[in-house]
Length: 329
Image (cartoon, one colour):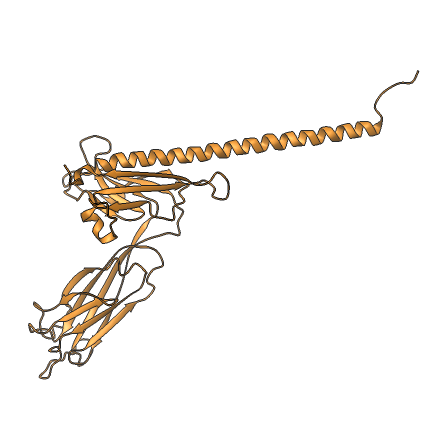
């Protein structure tokens, strides 16, 4: 009687089949686990974003004047909003900031000079930033033959008339800057470059001693331009954050160093603005008009922990009407 059993080859084949089957099961289990973990992370990130928007909308709806008399909305930018609201119901109004990028304030300056009667001079700030410009302002001052009512300087930016300086209150060859006037140039400076022209009236530098020698000899007038702007640092990671400042007492203030910042979502993928602003008729507002005319806001958030993997983007959107700014009460 012959003994029955596995030959060596049969054992090797059986072991090979077992190893392959075990490997396939391991890959399946691992892939399933990673897929479930990714799905859970995506769901968690989306839920965090949803809760963040719900909280934001609730706080915005109840926004009011700051305890120091500050206006309801302090800043209304594409990627940042600052407002005042009693978010913890303690009877004190907090300063609340929702934002995804950090902002910074910068400045640049320059001047130009004219040597002719009724002359002009110009200056350009080319490529002063590559980041989105939230706010931009220019202070323009003059010096020269500017003591008469018919002696003044008209100023413009990129071909748009800004205003007139030194038509009154300036003097002849004062040896100091005079007539300093601020102009909002946010929309004109949005592309990161801007040019200014100073155009004097025909009486400036007229015959009979109408030339000055402060810093430059025999000039009819000079103009100084101090450019300041606030820009958004888009090189940073896109993270939705919330900053809260509690008011101090005697006197009431909101010190920026006291801001308590928390992270709401680390997976924001917005290329379009987070915040959009509308007037009472539903018209979308440009940056310069937002503080005064905003009646309704729209919050739009795109969440995706990995844009290169399915599922795709989760978009969250909500509208909010600030009760204390409503016009249909």
